[in-house]
Image 1: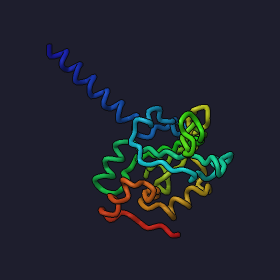
Image 2 (image 1 turned 30 degrees about the vertical axis):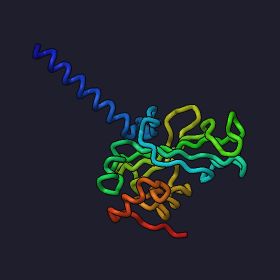
Image 3 (image 1 turned 45 degrees about the vertical axis):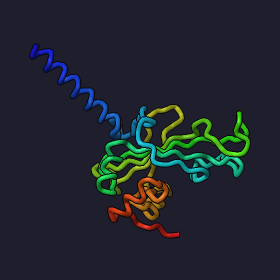
Length: 189
């Protein structure tokens, strides 16, 4: 009986460890970021329309701008609620989708279509000299190499991020928390 209880406890602990691990950034031996398969089960923090920049903006039009959906790992989200800051191992996923109108009953608005690209922003103070690294996942779903620090995303996020390199100013449920905790930095216009 004691053996069964011990096995059940061990199985439960292993399941929790695996679940927590799937929310943390995972890297290959050569330093590539593994795409998290369950990111749509993470916390959805915001969606933008027509804010896409860089290579993923190619092909968007004024009539059909792209949607940007932002997800963050649950552990980081909970820490942010408590502190107004992002802990080490925070991982954001930016999912970019095409938009469409005039479909089914929709005659005037925009709705989301297929995925155009998926990117990640990861905070890992030991791994990245500037604490944060950016990644663009290939369409194949393979692991992504870190984008060179010369990419514009690094300078833009550093200069304009309202909280620790992130665009919390566009996350309507999180910006009031950062302001209340004193971690919000107004960006330049």
